[in-house]
Length: 242
Image (tube, rainbow, N blue to C red; front, side, top):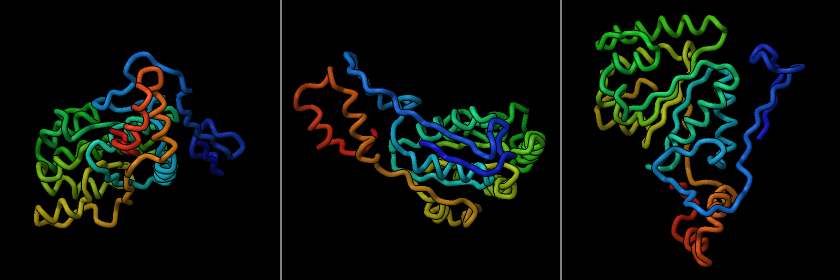
């Protein structure tokens, strides 16, 4: 996958106003051990497909826009975030990945500390103040930091509404990519609140794999699967990555 741009100021390694991003799928090699591990995120070169999504993520990052990625359980949200984290770091961007299911998801202070490496208080405004100062310091390089938040569903009812209001106010100084299983509007409707990110995050749906990407995954089992197993995978798994 390649994308070209006309602004030399975005990245130091652009040449004559052109920047090339490349994502290569792993070459096919028959295997003798099980190539499928559904419990760990797919990282390069195991991740396949999603090229249009990565183009949209790239465009959003360069324009300083934040996104919401919504996909069903085990649809590959973590794999997408981890892959995007690697690509952005390779271009010199300051990237931080956190998860609502990790220890950083227990409090505002733990969340901000995991992102910044700085001690942060647990009250929402105090934690947000630390994050703001850190973002301003990192942003002096000319590029706002990219913060990837996986499994954000659990954070929304657990954290104070005020904290997310402060995050909304930082958009532009930071770039957020929030991954969840449901749209924020539905989650906040159950909480009897209005989403603080309403009309601020562009929604990107994460659906089934492209047909050609699903075939790549199925073919990775050649040498291990029996004669009819590939057809069974097409029938029972279809294009679902899990």
